[in-house]
Structure formats: C-alpha cells, structure tokens
Image 1: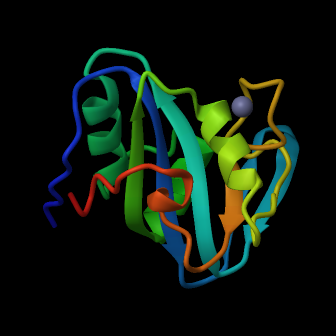
Image 2 (image 1 turned 30 degrees about the vertical axis):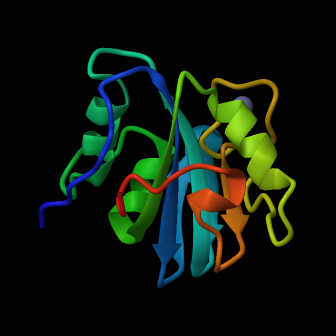
Length: 143
Ligand SMILES: [Zn+2]
C-alpha cells in the first residue's frame, strides 16, 4: 500500500494516531511485558536527523521494518489513522497538549519515552474521536 503524506523534510515533532483493533502484547527493556487494549492511541515523536519529518514518517508508514522503537509494535499491529506534524515542534509539548484533553490516559508509564525525563510516556491512549486538529495541527495524511 502506498500512502501519500504532505510533509516537509524539516526537523520537528509529530503525532501518530493509531487504531488498534486487537489487544497487543510485547516485551520492553527490563523484561517488562506490555499489553495494550484495542482503542485509539497517540504517539508523540520527533525527527531531527537527515530527512526530517518526511524521512521519519515514511519509515513509520512502512509495513515491513525491524522493531526498533516501542511504537514500531503499535504501527505494525494497528492502523495509522492520522498524522499531525509540527515543524520545529517538540514531542513533549505535543504530549502535554494531548494529556489535557478529556479521555486521554497513559496506559504504560515510560512507553516510547525512554530518552525523556519530563513526560510520563510518549504514548497516550486517547478518545476514539481524537485527531490532530484537537490540538491545532493539520492531518498530514488527509492533506
Ligand atoms: Zn517527553
């Protein structure tokens, strides 16, 4: 499947909105087992390397790839419903904005945020109606 995204090759932050239809279990560092229930999730990440947002998001959209980050398990099992991008933004600020919305909760402390000391996690469970517009971002998948 080819997915077109409207996204610049600039550094910034993004939200992946992923729908999980089946329960998902996987292991993370420290031998912890993670289980996510079906529902809608928002993962906040950043892209500051070569290729910027476009490079990172095209990797997330590939269906066959090594499991490198926690979020790879989610995108591998679920469906990416929307992508919010924020040029020059920071993933922690996006997570803060999402965390203020009704219906948001953190299913697994530390998930997706191994390199962050500020956030409870970079993956949040969100309201089924959540989309990037809820925090003022456009949807790069729909644009
Ligand atoms: Zn953070």
